[in-house]
Length: 115
Length: 113
Image 1 (tube, each protein chain N blue to C red):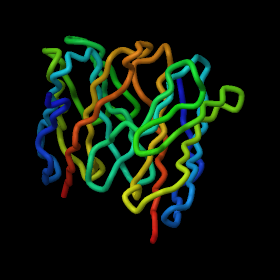
Image 2 (cartoon, helix red, strand yellow):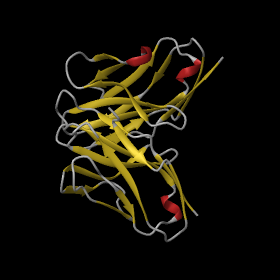
Image 3 (cartoon, rainbow over the protein chains, first blue to last red):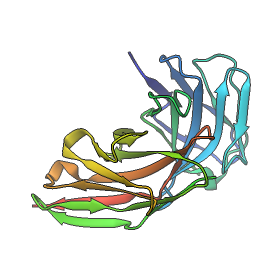
């Protein structure tokens, strides 16, 4: 059981480049989400999805795009990278809130540097 | 919407001493509460969670937390820490009418010999 798998683990981009961070889960979770982690700010929600075909914005969505065509995959796209997007990105999946299994499982993270 | 405040950004502690990490939350609905740990250069791992029932929750690695509804707190404790407990700890809340976790800013615990 792989859990939540993120690729790549590390990435360096030039300003203006685009890229896609991949996230896949094999636990059949309905909920998936993307967070960014910056020093002293905890984890902030970028986008989330409550099921295939359904996505919504979190706290810091600007400059990012998502789609959810399958239950398993939830890619995050950076449209035109900026230095302010230098961060560590985490993907998470979970059962719906309120169930006895409520818990978010996290990937190992992608460390992104934009120069 | 929910919010989480972790009252200490850094907690230095000596090995075998007790530690308490403080977490307060605000919410207009009932909540589920979590503590996650992040070791250097790794992802987040669940320490413990409170969904309902007993307000004292025991987790992995000897950690426990107590849910106090009147004080809207969920403090994390360990009676005797080890060097290997050096990590960043995050308190998180999931509102019962919400789809996502809200995190505190994190507390860095540094255990010294």
